[in-house]
Length: 265
Image (cartoon, rainbow, N blue to C red; front, side, top):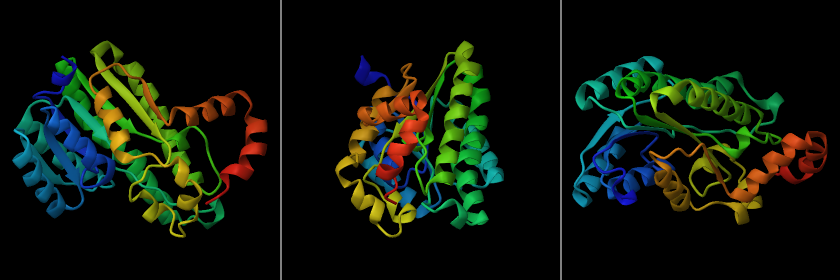
């Protein structure tokens, strides 16, 4: 029964041309879900579309979308809803980070991260909420981060965006509970994707956390396994989430001790 949970469901995934988004798409298709893939590179999406449709008996729709452009989000999602008529799952996966000291962060970079990680996520969610509320079913999955629970040096802006995502997600969950719409936050630690190519230009942080880096296939499977279940949060690795609990209970001690450990970017 569990293996059939996604069969013939419509799953929309932002940032799906590579990394976790692409892995989620493949695993959903393997379980019989129909896909709507969104990313900035249409050529990559069209190649993925052909590969998935060839391998699995599912439909795949692809659309070029820059989630930092809210007018484009409205246009694209209006088209998706008109064509599909139903959206069962939205995975807000698009996002990026830049590791900079607070005084070094340029305002264009700050705006860019908030526009993609927060405003874009909220805009995409706002477009699917009316149809899900009318259906009295659906699942919103927001990819946040452990950085949204524990701020670390040189990630002040990125961490702020993920704190915002968690705040929005927690509020949304309560608002939608009467509509049988599920809302899940995904809080991974470092993942072995291209994220660090942009975030960590020096490569110092990626090297320092090498032993803790999560396999992207594992993270994607955890997310897909949770689809259409009442999973509140996915925290990976589990032991890292203990840090956020300690931070909440003993913030001063955690900051004094943790600063030396976490300041490796």
